[in-house]
Amino acid sequence: MNTARIALPPALTAWRIMVRARWQALAARERRLVAIACTVLGLFVVWLVFIQPAWRTLREAPVQLDRLDTQLQQMQRLAAEARELRNATPLSAAQSAMALKAATDRLGEKGRLAMQGDRAILTLTNVSGEQLRGWLSEARSGAHARPVEAQLSRSAQGYNGTVVVSLGGSAP
Image (tube, rainbow, N blue to C red; front, side):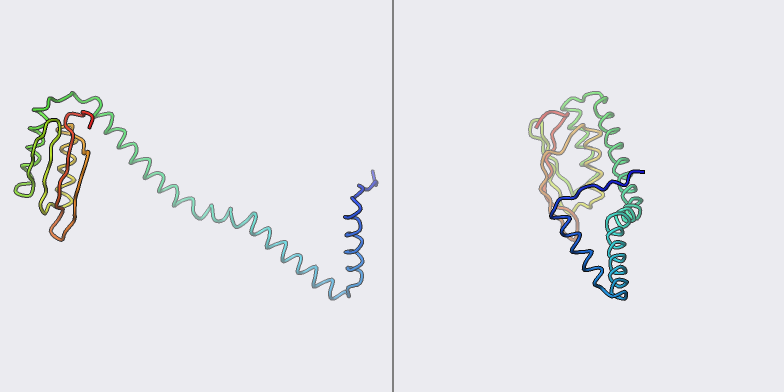
């Protein structure tokens, strides 16, 4: 067995000698208190560095996994919708306009549609959120239109304002 000691730098050796002398100068009761304090401090450091982060990860992981699963499902739905729209047969501007007019007719007096070239402007008056969502969904799937601008305000009766859509997937 090798009993050779590693040589320490002189400053460290002097510090070690000083600490050992102070330790020897302490009474037995003081040594015990210092040992207990060092043990408690050591356990606290172990808790902070190793146990607490792992515990926090275990506690937060299920919530974070649920949130990420929800995001993944939403992204998969959007990807599927994008594939469907990409594979859909192109519509002429007239067909898109007819589909938008049919969707607007379902809004009744609450919606007015104005066509301007490859864009359509829907003016809304007191439309509920569900009606607006339905119109946007129908405009996207039925007319292949995509919203390019919206100026909406919400009141107690519903949404008011305008929505501008681009027809037939053409660039804005």
